[in-house]
Length: 274
Image (tube, rainbow, N blue to C red; front, top):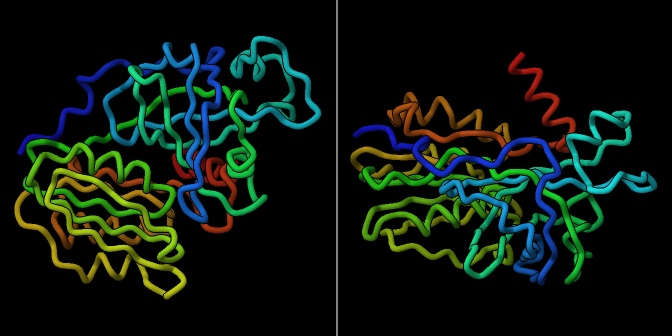
């Protein structure tokens, strides 16, 4: 099977510049650790849907006590202001983008007042505004694949849910999703023939070992494996060598690292690439 065409899609929005200023329309507590924020407003018109199911945006949060020029242009701020005053940037997957409805949906993993984006989502109210850059992205389920495999945790759940909605009718799709416990599970819809396994950290269920021991779908498999970096690294060689997934049919990346905030995590990723 040919590799999925991930290039012949709508162009991505340019990096830098003022970004897109969106307004909170409403919020919803989906689970104890997941808050949905629905964004809209005139700024949504400038956001291009790139066609990927793992499309992501970078949210820019002003630092408390710092005054920023208007308009809130992240690229200009980085050129003119010292690094310690730069906005705090966090990366989030877009759960859905619907220009007809005028809505972009982002689901935030929250752990009380820990972090930056989670507390913002918990406190967000209609009329609040946020600046974001993007979207980027690289993956969507290939309609040519015989089967699909989706593996991840809460951070990857929005992309997994979006991917399930794009699996062709009747195509086998196997999903393994790790969350804290049963209360963190969500209904997931697909036209594909879904085999879904929720794994609960509170019960000691291990994502890596479960995937390694699982039955594997037949034929050409298109796989999406995203989440905690340690888990992703542990599964990479297993999927490529033991399962025989072609590199061009494997979307695999760490979204976060245990014990590291996003600033530290991104710095480590840049150092690894250097």
